[in-house]
Image (cartoon, rainbow, N blue to C red; front, side, top):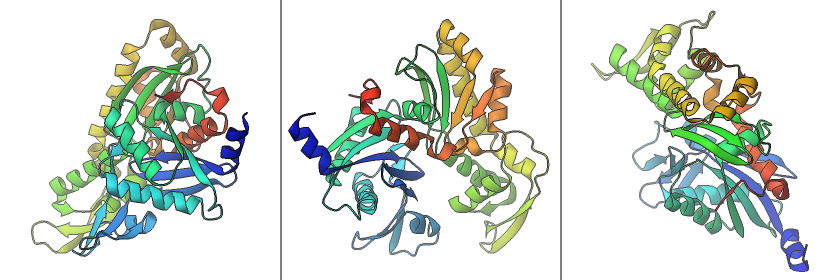
Length: 342
């Protein structure tokens, strides 16, 4: 290492970032996961001032007065509002660097496969605006595969299904490259929207995103699951505009989620059809690994196993799989020279 590189490393702080549609996570070697916050921002409509970011802004979603705009600047895995995303990234980086103000961040950021050059440049510019001195990108399926411990550098096919907030990515990886990948913009957010639509259609009940997410977590499933009890859901009666409450069953929620679940299953099957025979044989032996917060839907792993007739392994901590892989790449760049995006 040259003297210049040594000095640059001495006064820089490596940060790994999973810039997700639903949540943003940051990792440093010294602090571990130091930021794990919803990707949500509250803005003052008149002044444009940021009022809150993260968990507080998510709690206020659907409850803000007219002078406050609640924004999710990431949609479908990419930046939808560059200015708000930049301010959100700046805030999170400052959170990560509170005790190391004299050091500048060097960042490895995971992004979905197939994003455009414009979208890649938007992510890089947002991080540079936030103060980063260097930014490199890695594809989310690759980061996820590294995070769950798959042998990405070996001449063996490994299949990972990463169900995030905005996108689901199904990838087959071999020799540090993505051999086949299918991305669908159907994931955790689409599941919430499906529950909202079903409640509106069946019960004439209007609910917000946070309520739909609570329903999904409480009694949602991809396959029949014994032991789940009905739950009451509060919202607005569309007929009279009054607050009301209805009781819904796990079967109702499972049926509401059928569309997004089947779309994800179709992406898995499409990937299986596109993979080379030798890689298919590897996957038959090793099975499929699932990661991402959406994979926590009850029975999602069973559903994928049923349609593929393959063993499916759910990572013990799927929410942090992409960040763990991004962090591993950040700390061991020499071991992963081929995983970065140009």
